[in-house]
Length: 60
Image (cartoon, rainbow, N blue to C red):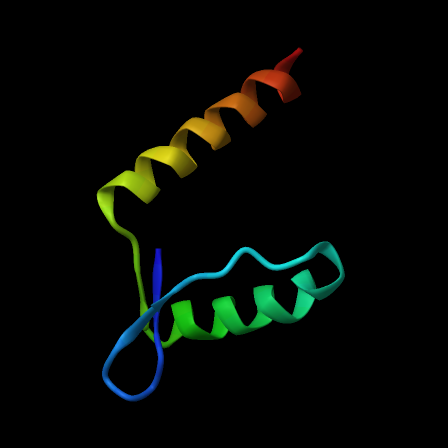
């Protein structure tokens, strides 16, 4: 997953520490709303597997 850095390039989306997550979520949400986020196929598959696993646990 990549977020545009404002200079025309991209940077990998960092996995924030728990204490910093809310600020990172806000920045990610703003970047996504502005159309500055792209997801490579491998990241999309990984996220889909994680969401499926969460859904399975929630259903039990």
